[in-house]
Image 1: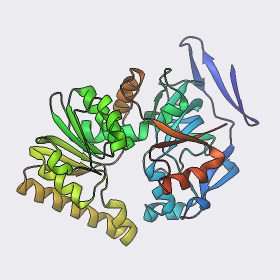
Image 2 (image 1 turned 30 degrees about the vertical axis):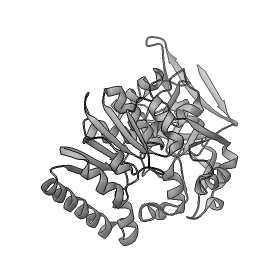
Image 3 (image 1 turned 45 degrees about the vertical axis):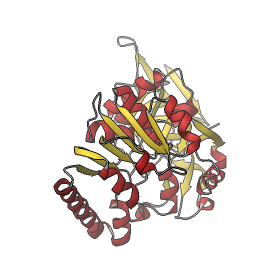
Image 4 (image 1 turned 45 degrees about the horizontal axis):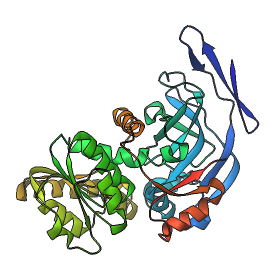
Length: 367
């Protein structure tokens, strides 16, 4: 029998000798420290609270003892009110999508993981109980083994951004060896992940980025990196592309991306308008309005340019997460971490991201 003692609470795992694995029993961890968002606003609204209740695990769920979580742009946007129509009725909520930690308990139907195993993964963007907590609950298909070659801090920076890129490139555009990809905004976590994923497949990659990112992006295998701050990037980009991933998503980059696509190509933006319309008009009106706008754009560009137009979002994907793990183990997928904060400094971390004091990835560590 194995006992995992955490902050005065106990979880139990029983070894099944015939399978040399842990069969999970109900976790006795009933509460933990967490960062709550009681209302929308600036970093000052975030509250670190003790003894926040933990729900019982469902059969397909895993309780993870958190070691590190990354601060994603979605976290700061949600804190400020993005997705208000969905999240306001369930306040207070817990922010956080990424996680790296250790399995503390397993639901009855979970068989791919074992208690004590180091894991990393990411929650769906609409999850209301996030990972800014000593213990987080994720579905089995939202987690995989953490590569032994990287730390919890390094691992926590990868899954949400990389899965966002993977869903666009592999599920929507279905990129293949020899194709040409343009990443608009390759210096961010999603853009940099997309570059590395495409290079691993054997694609030819070009990107726009800030000048400070060029050396890192070229070292990752991109064939062209154009500094949007000093160059006429539309004129500088070479040739036409089979797919464009636009992480910026303003009218100027959308126009450029669509005009640089070959017939049959895919334009994918991360800045879809679903949340903005539902926040403005409510779910009942905003959701169908946003879907109508998407359909109109899809038909328009299919007719005028012969290309496919998509809004892309992160979704859990076990196949994608497995590929991300393998690439991370091989050293072919990395997201640099610029600074770490203690979870107790969560307000300072969000303030630094709001003020753009730290351009790269920020990670919160748990003691």
